[in-house]
Image (cartoon, rainbow, N blue to C red; front, side, top):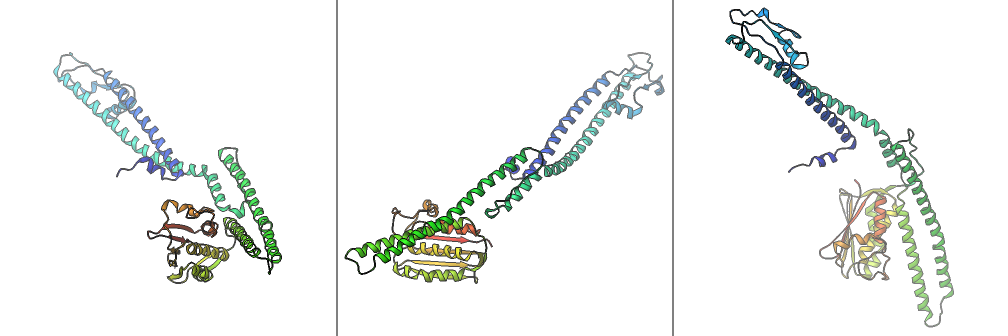
Length: 418
């Protein structure tokens, strides 16, 4: 399987990518400079060799002391000429240009110069390449350190953002330093925190006001109905009273559900150990009358000992109550509800029988005022049970998922962090 270099690069941290870019850029520029130097050095040495002057001598009259090399001495001088030194001129007295021994001598000199030239270029390329690789690694290490210094404000912003929650929105980054891109990013983040703090504060005020302004009139209305329409009543008014009291009770339940949803969205302020097995059994006992009315059996199973989690006991009780009530309410006659707790896996599973649910509509069940079935205005429930359950689960760092059963019904799985 072939790997795309872009995919591999994208998996690296930004600091590593920045350091790699520094080293790669240095390597490319150094390689281009090395190639430029080698080409010019090769061209220059060829020109110097072609410009050499030689005179032919007869073999008997040949005396090596008659030759002189200007600009270098010996083989080392020839090697220097091959690199960047001035031209070396060989001169000697010769009796005539047609001497055979002179031609042999010139051929040997030419071969020696070319061998020295090739050796000098090869050594220059070899050691230059080694130095280039070493310097590229040094540039990568230096780039890593420079990238760390450059990204230090970003790390500070990230750390501060992780510490800021709904309960600490008053904190600000207040980044100091020059007015650059990072400083403007921190200022933008602080401005966003200002807007979020105002929004959450407005929500808190709304929840507090709604708790008084909505529930109190309903309580007064219920009292007036019970007192004003006390028995004995004329024929027909008793049924009207019961309908009005039922509507009042439904409205009060809806307001309580909305307030609970708003509270769970705000998160958990204080936690304590909660044994979910006891909560599940208590919930099953409270819903026993509803289960008996719907002819549904509710059972609680525990595996691997007691399951203890840290959280808000009131919210966790509402979580299990909503899951179990939803499983009982949307069930069939003679069906069952199984609540299984696995302490080893830190999971709680609620399985129920009931109508078939398509996998495409499962996610819609967690939306507020969404229920399975075409009748959205049914008298049973408000479509907030699973929405509240998921919100409470997220407030405790847990995950609530749903899967449809092939035989009908749902499997709701609540996973807590180990």
